[in-house]
Length: 464
Ligand SMILES: [Zn+2]
Image (cartoon, rainbow, N blue to C red; front, side):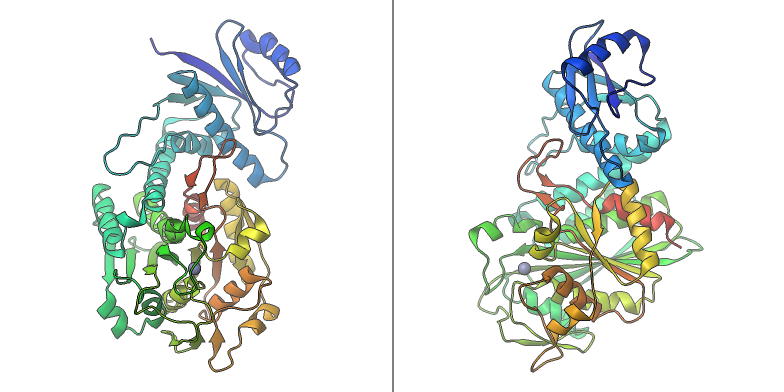
């Protein structure tokens, strides 16, 4: 017999529609523990007919926070159940519209990164959500599984993921998921990058023994409706280059390729679910190292688009990679371009570790992304762009400088990218905060989060 437990999500202190056999005992617990039914609250009720768990999901009014509360509740439920060695949880109280995300978050909770074949010793818990069904669960499981793959890429040590190794892992994953007939993968190595004048990514990769590359994925469904290009920053490791980072700044820099992992994950899911829009992914993979051929402060680079950039800080390298990628993206003539990048520390200073910055001059595109993020329970916040920031990037001896002054750095970075977009609706997601957690928080595991994949999938499904 499996060790079962019943859990109930409570939104506020009132107990609505709860099973009558638990009603009195839970009401007592609500009073005893002064439960307000808010996100982050969890109580294991041991008296009564059998043990049960109450977990709060309320307290926030906006749609996105409500969905984020579901994810937090799932993580707390998983942790509590595994600590007390329960093998099966039946969960009630979830609104129908949140079941998919709750299922997804329960699968996510099983994720644990280990190097090589070291086993994931996390407890497998069987869970059943009362309002859910088999097809909701199946979809959630697939999303979570691709998210786990993307999280693995981010958590993987730099020693295990040079651009070459990274590309090999992507290729075998696509094959393993039997998507190699749906997704075409193309690599541009250093020679090809030279021929194509991708001098931004080439400059950034010069200081490393492992040459840079661009990885491209194409998914084109029959009778494709629209075309979306996703662009990801894939700095396998960012030492800052000759403008070397500090110990504190460098220790988590294996995560500087999270943007690439996010867009690759979204591309894989789009193919798996057979969405109606075609999706092209460009990931710029490079290592920013201070080797003897490294690019230098003061260097002027002619980007693929022809604009020249004076490099005043080699640690502002992501935008140089993205400049080339966005130029390639535009050439595809898509209906929308979205890039994801762990681009600036300034964005984390402005918005904290949980929120991504959304930068776009296109109202329709921004609204669609915000709506998708509400459904996926991912926090994003629209940030300013415009002339005030663009001014700071005017070059003295070149078209552009790669940094402005110390203020508004996330917005100047976005304006830098904007220089490489001509006409396509475009949005930039600065995920430097939420892509990777250094410490564990309540209901929030540490390490790679898979941030943005759920949002991009929902966006791709809806965009027209
Ligand atoms: Zn950097």
